[in-house]
Image (cartoon, rainbow, N blue to C red; front, side):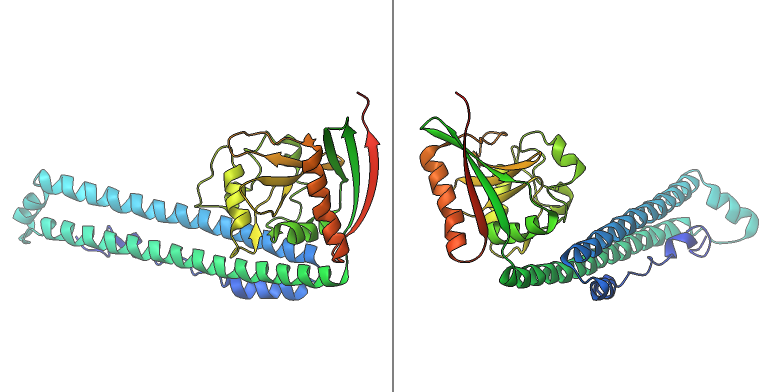
Length: 310
């Protein structure tokens, strides 16, 4: 027995690692808009996901083959096949030594594949960071020249309560507004327009979970949203169907997509559903924040009152 026989397949080298940073720069070089930069980001994620899937399948197949061959060799050694063969051929028994060498070789090869997979992930993360930084740069440059236009309707529910509704905005405005009021760009361009947004069930689906691995997601996930919002080192966040509003303290305010409008809601850390009915003083405080951004020249805001029938 030797490695060139039964374990030859295990010596197969891992597939070459794609230079995703080069691809990312190439895509960005052709992407003239923020939307096109997001398309490059989506393409990068798709290629990485497919590469990891194929890589994992190949690695599992080779591992299965190696373990099968070792098992067969151990079975043969245990039942004396090697010794019987030596009697007829004059060869010295070597099964035990081969099995031990092969077991060690299998372990080494498995480690080589594991390290290659880790390197693949590092390359992807670096390329993803380069695209993320470019999107942030473009968003900041656009915000310096263009003020997002918002239309706010204040629905008065008597004297004590209000509902604040913004007209639904386009994709570019939603990205710019996210950068402005949460301090981060979303990880997906259509984070307010995704088909699954209309199927959201409370806070359980308020984040793109695939973008957060291996970070654990709490249920309800508002504590995870608040943690991401307060992480000053992160340039992007996987908001889905909403934009958190950066505020001091442990309260979480969000601008949530609801059909043709977006409503300001207050989320609690223990409940899945956020509440859109605000106390009048809370609504005034929130409107004051948007008026502050108007005064600072960051947004344009049209206010419109409207009273519900009681």
